Image (cartoon, rainbow, N blue to C red; front, top):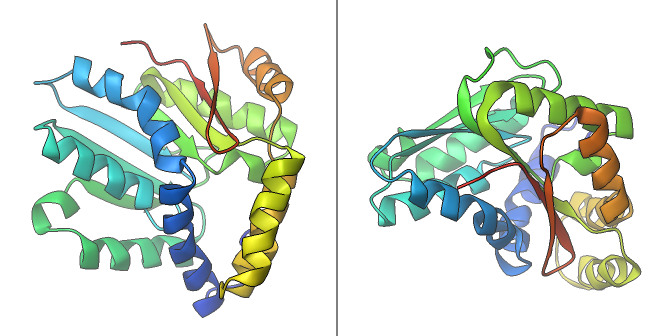
Length: 229
């Protein structure tokens, strides 16, 4: 349902906002920062430009700039989503949640992640969190290639592990808790569209990524990274 761009009302807004607590409580932010934090710390004193694809409500971008600001790091994020309604909600949410100083570090743009309007090496890092599972295999390969093209230092993908425990673990709260209908439908489906290690290995190989590192994270998440420190 979240892939349906014709849905622009409170159904979309509610589901986007609910993803924030999922990413916080179920290890989404932690999985991304496990790979990203050492990279950012190693570049202290230098500005770092991140590209966040499939950015949704912009919560990963918000988490990263807050984390960087607490540590005195100069990090800016371009948060991209293909859905104009989603991007508009992200802008409103970030305007409300961030100080002017931190808000200025996030630019929200509308673009196709498979055909990015950015030059080669326009960013230091390209990341995609909870986005790749929305794509078919050939599209996931194309995404990895685009990320690799626009990112000088490497890419970082954070996505779901397709596993029965993960499926039933999210199915129960999705049915029992007072969540939006879109979240109730999409959360279990997202797990079914997630990845096994071999899937990510095949994507990395087909995309021609150099020295990809694939790690498992709690709770039932994978990261695929070509970042070095």
